[in-house]
Amino acid sequence: MGGVSMNALPEPDMPEVAFAGRSNVGKSSLINALTGRNNLARASGDPGRTRELNFFDLAGRIRLVDLPGYGFAKAPKDVAARWMALTRDYLRGRVNLKRVILLIDARHGIKPADEAIMKVLAEAAMVHQITLTKLDKLKPAEQQAMIETTQGQIAKKVAVYPQIAATSSAKRLGLDALRADIAELALPENSS
Image (cartoon, rainbow, N blue to C red; front, side, top):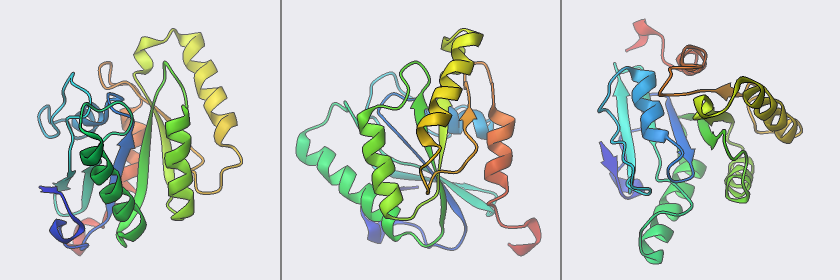
């Protein structure tokens, strides 16, 4: 289900985990890999394809939310501004939003646009978990260095979940650990 305004969103009747990140960071690919469903979230080589908040109900226990990417989306400035406004409203006003998974391309690390989103999340007192993507594109020593560098960058940020997730959708790296983090936020099976 997609929403283009706050009024069009599903009822806040179950926990939600939102996925945020720059355009082309691999949000849709990660959602598909985590759920084991290749076409749940539409992945594209064309940055900026997600143009609304997309909600994926997982057995009535939790919703995953694919947020529009920020950065270099190929969209008119007024359209991109509307996406950002909707995303900010969602992040600040969604009572059942339990965590934001903030995706960072492991090849590039935290960029100024990511820092800006982290500031918005901190101002909204929204817990967010840094998740490195495309880990398979780095050599093992580079992977560890990026994890350590990123850990150092977030160490003093209050709203950041302390455990970094390091993933590769293509090679299925780190998915079980991230899946377990998300599962902890879901409704118990007997509560639905």
